[in-house]
Amino acid sequence: MYFKSIFFEDYQLEEKRVTLGRTITETDFVVHAGHTGDFFPHHMDAEWCKTQPFKQRIAHGTMIFSIGIGLTASEINPEAMSKGYDRLRFIKPVFIGDTIHSEITISAKSDAKKPEYGNVTEHVEVINQHGEVVLVCDHILLVKRKSV
Figure 1 (cartoon, helix red, strand yellow):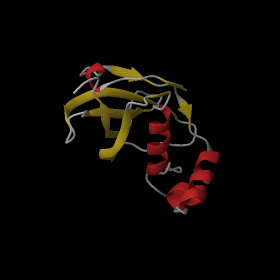
Figure 2 (tube, helix red, strand yellow):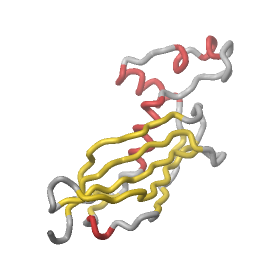
Figure 3 (cartoon, rainbow, N blue to C red):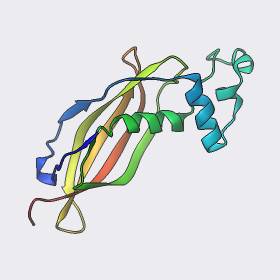
């Protein structure tokens, strides 16, 4: 992780970056359940899950979102701050042993309320080891301009 200043003008539409991968473990399930209080059987009860359509435990969607976004934080841009996330969708289930990575594409740029900033939208796709998209969202950034 390192700092790299990227100003609004530096972002290019359709520019893409790809993160490293991360394998999801049973420990991830247990820790996330402990942090959130979400001990639903879909995530924690292997025997019950055998009677369900996926036949195994499925990862918490919020955990995959957290890990997928965390993978994107390999460089810190001191010129930008997160305004939040839009259009978050859980597309496919993630299981213990799956390896995910994130692909980020600059999908939109627009003026912000304050003229010294601009809005940048990063379209984020979290993808499993089979090349399947498992989660999508749009990350909205407020980014300083080089000049007003």
